[in-house]
Length: 205
Ligand SMILES: N[C@@H](CCC(=O)N[C@@H](CS)C(=O)NCC(=O)O)C(=O)O
Image (cartoon, rainbow, N blue to C red; front, side, top):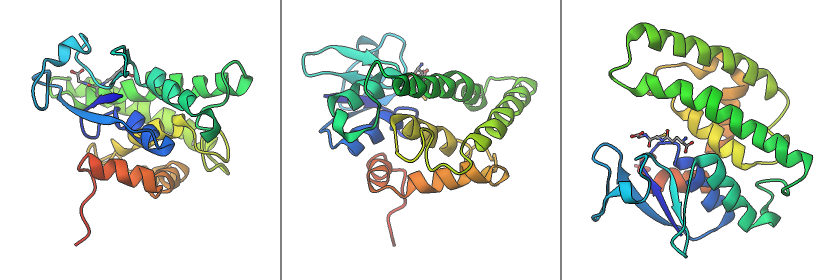
């Protein structure tokens, strides 16, 4: 399988999931501005919407949308427990988290990274994010991960989204449970491997 990604974007979430599962995945780096694939190729022929991530299966099928990709990957190795079994209530709980993250968190961040977004709109997006973080911080009180004691694909996604606070100078210290969660996930060996592979970890001196 091939994972089309750009460093530090939401594609880091399926990248982490693939490593947590021990699935061999070929990384294909995309320049999301020029819509080209490193080494040659028009990314728009992979995903006409031009955004990452996209997963190319061995039979050539393309799967897009991060929340769908991470569930597909988790279901390839159900015993790893990164997603509850399909059809169970717990699986709907996971989907509830993934949908919350994608619509209420991820897409509040997006305009903050766009240079053309008017400043007054950015201020509103920051307020909305802070309100969601207030609630989310309470949800993580006394829990290691979103689903409870075990790491799931939703945690990979939340980890990536929280990482975006740093370049935007949003101080996570205001939400101690979110800050602790971020540090907890960052310490996972496969997460560190994924960050390293995307060039996001400074090499030890
Ligand atoms: N709905 C998509 C959104 C993906 C998305 O927003 N990707 C961003 C990076 S985090 C991207 O590639 N942006 C470049 C662009 O839209 O041109 C998903 O959840 O997978």
